[in-house]
Image (cartoon, rainbow, N blue to C red; front, side):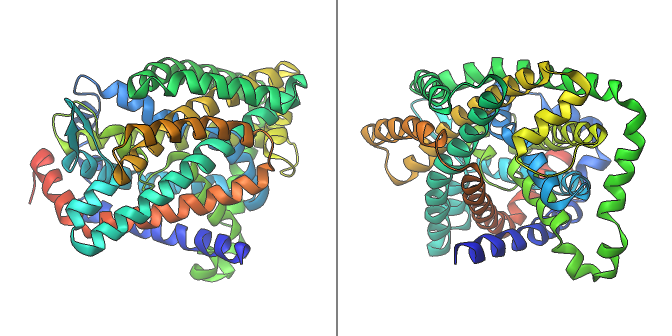
Length: 430
């Protein structure tokens, strides 16, 4: 039964995401394509955008960019990379839509804005349908914060540290737990202060290390790119027809892990962006376009090309595969750099998801006591993540991603006219 639910949700996700992404690109007249300069200018307008960007990227730039890519390729082959990038280009508009709606329907408490999908579901969709969607989404968000945002991230981080220096998983988990507790108890301010330093620093380090590895193996880059296209567009995929092709491992893993990584349409980023000092809902939404591009097209592709140019077999544990691939170019130092990268990215994501979980809980109850109990339990779950099977956690996270995304996209589709109205106010054109 568990496998049936897992496979069914994963099978449903790619066609739904791709269809809705294409629909909104056409429905909104490809505004970001025809107004690139205005779109770029709006991305970083407003006083606090960088704060919300760092928090949202912290949620997206987790182990999906490193370990998740390796897992996708080990199952779906090199072709999964193409579909990760293709899904990013097509679905980045979904992140724009959900952030726009979150800002439009956000609430204010104590001088601060807050919001998320549950509020545009309840107040935008309205009626019984809106309330049901909001409640179910918030419930999955609470569960997902512990599984996808916590246990999966911690599991990958402790595995990479053990692989690199042999440190027992429980010790790394305890360190994670302590740091997480110190940061999340400081609320959104403490979380944003941590992510505004950790995210840019680790992104720069990982990009530099990846570029060095690619320069070292530059003669293999053309063949790596060729393998991506041949695997994704090979005879087997074409002869299987459009339907069979759409449900192939390459597409399922590419789009599925792409969704896990960039969270486009997943409903998480809106919870970070709702508190922004935005000049308009559409202006804040444009930042979602940048997030998806940077997360998937830049970071995930770098990981994939490094793996393919290394020549190592696309099999085995995700963390081990990445470390082995980088070691071909960079030697033994790779295990330390990758371990640090995975650890900091994972920690940033764990900390960010504490905010998402709190937002979901607040929808059910504004009780501060309930919030503190949740955060204590959340921090304790870090220890659990350091002990349980990584593969089991990945399966549960896939279910959470799929469920939250399908629920959220349904609400966004129902509110498409509101999205178009706000887009036309900012970009013009009827």
